[in-house]
Amino acid sequence: MPRKTPITYDHSLMWASRSSAGASDGERGALARSLEPVKTRLIEDWKSGRVGFFGIPELKDDLAAVRRTAADVARQFTDLIVVGIGGSDLGARALIRALGREGKGMRTHFIGANTDPEEIALLLDRIDLRKAAVNVISKSGDTIEPMSAFALLRDRLVRKVGRERHRRHVIATTDPKTGTLRQIADREGYRTLPVPRGIGGRFSALTTVGLFPAACASIDVAGLVAGAKEERDAFANTSAGASAPLLFAGLHHDAYLRRGQRISVLMPYADGLKEFGSWFRQLWAESLGKKRSRSGMVVNHGMTPVAALGATDQHSQLQLYNEGPVDKVVTFIEVDSFRKDFKVPNPYPDLEGVAYMAGHSFSEIIHAERAATAVALSRNGRPSGTIHIPKISPESVGGLMCFFMLATAAVAELLDIDAYDQPGVEDGKKAMYAMLGRKGYSL
Image (tube, rainbow, N blue to C red):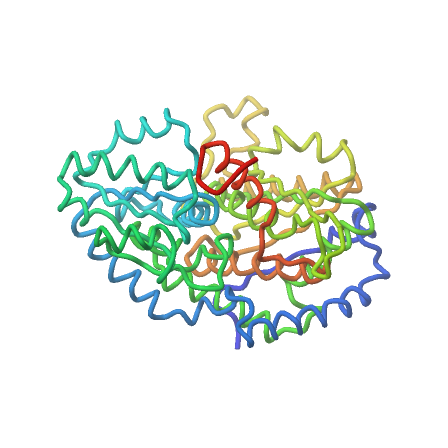
C-alpha cells in the first residue's frame, strides 16, 4: 500500500564515490547486514513495551483528552503560556513553529526553559493573565527552571483573579500518580493531562506533552500522530537495507567510528522547521552522549549535534563545513512543495546582478540553494544526505519526528548504549540543588 506522506532519505552523497570522505562504496552490503539485528532488537523492544515511544500512536485515550481539554481551554482564553524545559518545551515549540502559522487558535508563549528574569518580565508585561491559560509541564515537578517560573505565574494569577478562580487557568501535564507537580495539582484542583509512563521527555513531543499546546494552536494533532504511525509502520515493514531511518543511523555510526566525523549538522531548508533543529539537538545529544556502554564499560560516546538553517547558514557556517576539519556529516531537510510561493519581479532588466532572478519562484531559489550547498560539500569531499518531505503538514512533521526517534534509537543500538537515560543531566541537577540549599543535597 503506497504511503500517504512518504519521507525519503537521499544518501547518494554520503558515499566515497561522490564525496571522498564518505563511506566506502564496497561497504554497502555489510552496512545493510549490520542493520538487520538492530531492526530486530528495536521491533522486540516495541512489542515487549520496553521502549515506550513506539506505542505513541496507540495512546488514543490521551489524544482524546488532549483534544477535549484544548477545545475547552480555547473557548475560555485567548493565550496559552507553556511552562517547560527540554523535552517538555522543545517539541511543542517545533510543532507550533512548523504548523501554527495560520493565525488560528490561541496565541502561544513559552517560558520556563530559562530563569533569566528579564525574559520573564517581558512575558508578564505583554500578556493579560486574566485571558491566559497556563500549561505547566513536568513529569516530576522538581525541575527548577519551569517550577520557579510556574510559582511566579501562579502568584501573579492569584493576585489578578483570586485564589479560587486561578485554578481554571492552570493545566498540569505530569505523572498520573506521583511527583511534586502531581501533589500540587491534586492540592489545588488543577486539570491534568498524563505524561505517559515509559516515554522520556525528549521522545515525548507526540504525546500529551507536545500535543496539548499544538491542539490549542489549532494544529491537527490526529494528523501528527497518524504521520508518526505511518513512519513507524514503514520501518517495521521495510527491510533494514532499504529503511531510511536505519540507513541514516548506519551511515552516521560508520562516519563516527571509522572516520572520526563526530559532528552531526541538521540543516532544514524551511524556516518553519527552524525549531525542529533545536528539538533534534536535544534528542541526539542526550540520547547518544554516554559515558558507559550497557555492560558498564567506559566508552564516552557521542556525536555533537548542530542546528543550522538553510539558506541562512550558507552565509554563516558553510565556509567552515567546506574548508574546515573533515569531522562533520551534514543532513539537509528539503520541503518538496511549499504552502505559499511568489515569483521574483524584474524591476531592473538592465542589471544582470538581479535580472537573472526575474521570473524564478522563491521555492525554485531555495531548492537551488540546497542543491548547490550539497554540490559544494561534495566537491570538497564532505559527505551529506538529504531528507525529503512532500510538504510541511501535520502528517509529515509527525513522521519526521518519528524518523529521528527511530534513527536515534538505532544508533544507540549500534553503539551498545542506553538511549533513554541521562545520568550526566542528573549530576548537574544535584549540584544545583546543593548550591540552592535543597535538603538532602551537598556538593
